[in-house]
Image (tube, rainbow, N blue to C red):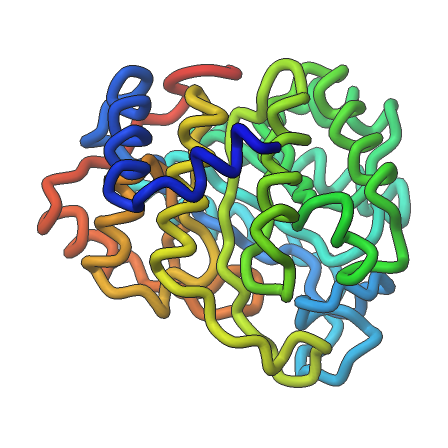
Length: 314
């Protein structure tokens, strides 16, 4: 931890320079992975994640909806492909898959997304060994299951499941041969040590996660974290740079909270090693920059979209 604190706390421009050097040694700095995220089952979740608009424990104005139809998912995936997004991510608000019928529908969604030539990612809560195996057989490219924060702070944010539950699902996904997408959220009241504790846990996974989303909390009215102050762009840049140094081969995703960042702030994060974004006007239930804004940003910075199935973990 002391070594990690030294990296994180060095002068910001030195840290960004170090991270940018690592980034260029392992990635094309002109390429950004563009991902599209669709909520395939919204609201009514029994988990009590303090940041989440979809928890049934809080009054946030998000209504509960059942699993969407495959035609709707396929239409959204086709639209994502037309807009240059090589990865299509499907998120369901539940602690774990509820019925075999739902699971069969999700498996078919994965197959159809892959048939379009897209990478397919899901976030479906906790998985069994058999479910992970069947997702792999259906062609799932990557599975998202965030740690959210360091183990020492986790029970301040979520009490309906444990850190060990999270790690067990990560191990099942890895054992099935599916790439891991796993990161966390800044701005939930945690301190720097908690953030770096999460990085140490990710670093202990073998191999490292293929994708690491770094989210800035988007405070949601009605949740316990509704009044949290915003995360500064300097904190985001420090965390992204440190993540790049610790996990040199991972795709580091500048995720939630990007709508609140200026183009200059996003450019700093790209320089610090972020090379993945979610594009589209919504991330599950929270606003996000639209595709046109992202295309303008890419043109301004001379960035291009990373091709599908390129790199590690596929």
